[in-house]
Amino acid sequence: MAAIYPFRALRPPRERVAEVAAVPYDVVSTEEARALAEGNPSSFLHVSRPEIDLPAGADLYADETYAKAAENFDRLRREAPLEEEREPSLYLYRLVMGEHTQTGVAACVSVDEYDQDLIRKHEKTRPDKENDRTRHVLELRAQTGPVFLTYRPDRRIDALVEAETKGEPLYDFEAADGVRHTVWRAPAPEQLVRCFGEVPMLYIADGHHRAASASRARAALKGQNPSHTGEEEYNRFLAVVFPADQMQILPYNRVVKDLGGLSPEEFLAAVGERFRLDEDANPRGPGQPGHYHMYLGGRWRGLTLKDGANDSADPVAALDVSVLQDNLLDPVLGIRDVRTDKRIDFVGGIRGTEELVRLVDSGRAAVAFALYRTSVEDLLRVSDAGGIMPPKSTWFEPKLRDGVLIHTI
Image (cartoon, rainbow, N blue to C red; front, side, top):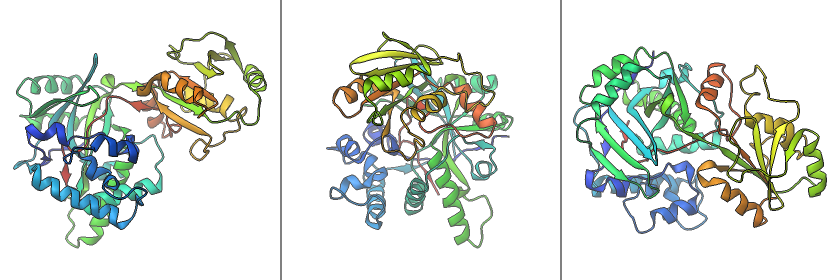
């Protein structure tokens, strides 16, 4: 079963929500966050990325950084002001980006189900990032941004969501990036709770570190509470749950800083031993799985594996990102572990292949690879097999906003 729980959202007033709402903390650097929040003291980035209000070069993990987050959160609660709902509710959260629309249910989900792998994972988490978000949650006693979950579609839930988004929304605003965010309070949450109770599995799409930090924060608070019952709010974490058939994944492209000591001619020859080379590829990127576009020396080239399509029964090995890693990045460029190798970087598909060209033409990278997007079904298949997706396999777009619906614990 997939348990979802209404919660008493802490949220900004309608007339201030566009000022408060901010991109997720982990999709921007400190410099980008500072620029986005400049001139807007209500931006939630002052809470999620508090180092922007400290001197340049401040330690992201220092005591004063978390103290600044708590200070900024308290100020925002007073001045926005943020107000907590009187009764627990579920919410419907719609994202519209261009012609793409997706509508999910904002709710709390069970930490126990996460710990028991009933909320399936597909990504390894980094201890430093877990430590950071765990401390952030404990200092604020709040989960300020939702985990992005998905599930295999259910027509009953679709019908309920459609019916419950007919009324007047709580929020309806367009963010600076052009994404429209519309939120309703669900008038009949009991029906949604019952229907989700028959959904066999939830899957983390994005937000593994937030989910892991919720589990660790629960363990810490449980240890401090001699009267722990299991019903406390810290036993749940904030999520928005979208049906898989509405999700949109963009490619996650790769750039490499050097050719590993090879000349461009030697590199092309080594690649040509494993891949067929097309000397004239579409600069927008490949149009189907199993195809890769490579930008080198001012030219886009197409690559396809010489041995034909990869038909591995292993759902991880069958992914395009794995094929590129196993047949080019590792054997040709010597990049063994993309998690730790400083020679490789990743560019989310929202930035377009133009960003790959810019990085190579500016000399910041030697070669770039544009991939076809990983499918949502790929993600579900890997998760069901208990596998781990290779790093930077999926870039979900559009993204939710922090500070719109907050779960206090």
